[in-house]
Image (cartoon, rainbow, N blue to C red; front, side, top):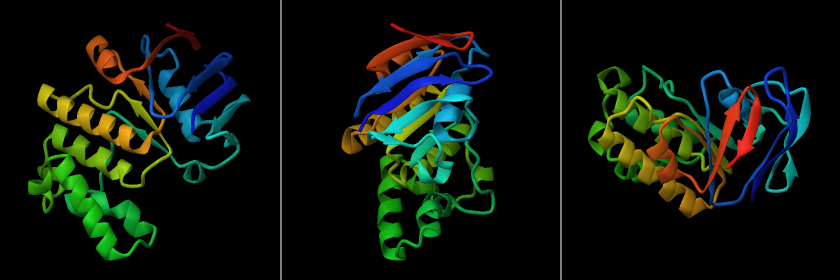
Length: 209
């Protein structure tokens, strides 16, 4: 169930090759503007590549639209629906898929507890702190049980307590579902905590360390 990139290129990236085994995390560091976010967006299907191949679980997904790839991407500031409560935001991805309400409620409740936000279930995003919003956003993404997870500095604006909660939940989710992850960060300590493999990107080129 590995995530494999073969000779990926576009106007920023130059011949990117990588493989992330199931249940493991590749941490990518490097200066701003090096192409890290562009790489994740291409893997997720949000940006166009000029050439190269993307494989997930040995299946070619290069030409698939984002919604068919079953790859989730988490940004620094993940948008929530302002008119929905925390519970409704977390439940929304499954509700859109037509999952029975009883199953949605049970699963959302588990995520609320795991992310320590049960007490926020009836609040709206405008009444949440930045750390609370990001916990809700990541819980919402994980509700769909993606086959791979791409994280673009997801914890960089959070305090230490929120960082620890989310680091634990991300690692627990990965351990349970045995999925490959790519994790971008500028924080060396965070990289050590989250990563199994490490690479540096400079000027569109990836160097494995």
